[in-house]
Image (cartoon, rainbow, N blue to C red; front, side):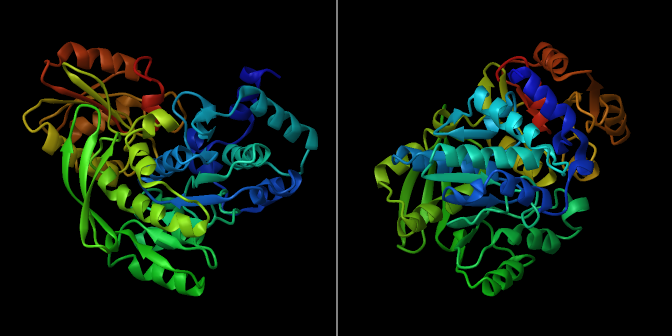
Length: 432
């Protein structure tokens, strides 16, 4: 098979959560364990940092990858989903896995004729592990897909675990309360492996403390070490003043990820940089600080408050749940208080649509669309729902038609936001 045929096989033959939703979710690790055994346990062939959380785990993974590779370490990065090319999920020092490596892995898997039916995610996780071992990476950032305890990535034995935050996304699979969801995320905490928790709150704090005590490991609350205070948004980056709580000092940090919600991710990243030297990874302060202003160029990260055009400003963001949408709205209020908002939106069926709609401003113009995947809410259905709830909304069959309409309507000082689903952004013909 060539690369296109290999992708066709993967997308057509393997259950894929991003396309079909909960039907592709496997509530155990049996298939992943069987695949790891078949490929001679690649999960044991490299050091790793394991990152979970409702929001922010992708940004955190990319920032840590940028830091480690800027300090001279051969750094793997496994994230999901992808925007344009499947290979975005598996990178070493920012470079995507080669096409021939993907082909070779799938051919080896097919020849094994294993008595299992793995999901797309299960197989690609093991593909990443196999590649990182073969290339002898010094360390890899491994982002969970969904949850933690039963996520396919949870077969690794990391040197450090990070849980960014807890929201109510995927409550139908992970639990109806934040405590239950936190318990699933806490499943990545391993015996003796330090864990960083990105947010401390009364609802979930005891869950992490209990799990850390059972696992005989130390827990680090990032807010007890670093707090982001003043911010200043520049043309290409964001200047952040950070309080170093432990040393009672301040530092200025420049990051090229301009979403204000990065202020929630940065403290956990900084705590990780404090812990890594004791875990065998020496970091130069200046290289580390410089790398935070080069995350996108070093790792290929896109879609996080991504300003792609001016007059009017056009921003892409992958926020897709109420916590993410709330953060986006806070940024709009601060950065575009007087601008007319043109929002291109599409959602998938297993999201809490009512909770998201309850947050959206009624004075914006909405261009409702859908991704070309089975999970997508038909644009006509979502448009009607928004009309019923008092929104000025118009439907478009795909995101490119919606963007064309928004550009025709918007004035130079307006804001066009494309947000609500990874898969909407993935189908943009421009900018990505």
